[in-house]
Image (cartoon, rainbow, N blue to C red; front, side):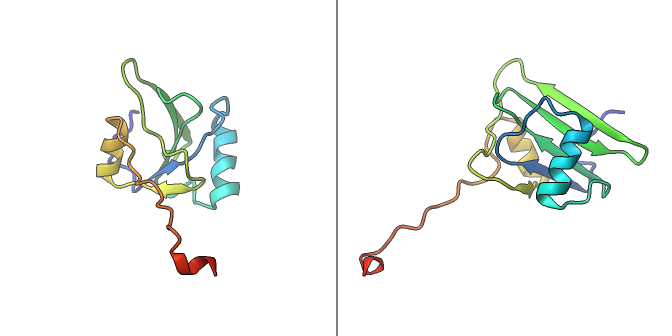
Length: 118
């Protein structure tokens, strides 16, 4: 069974770097222990390691987990590495990610005003 990116009810991007040597059980533990999300709620979880030309996906199809692995031959992903959370993506953001555009805006740093120093 191939997964259409728009079919799952939820698609989460796990930001930062994940050890892609992990298999199904290891990735499921990352989701359950770090983010408390329901692995069985028609959700696809996307993970990226050090290299931006590949990622893994974890999906429960109702009978078991499917582990997806995608490697781009040309180009790569703009994975949000400045965050440490799992963020739900819209269909538009999934398309941006697969086109090499970072789907999440960078966090803005609030600049200090002169009065903040006193």
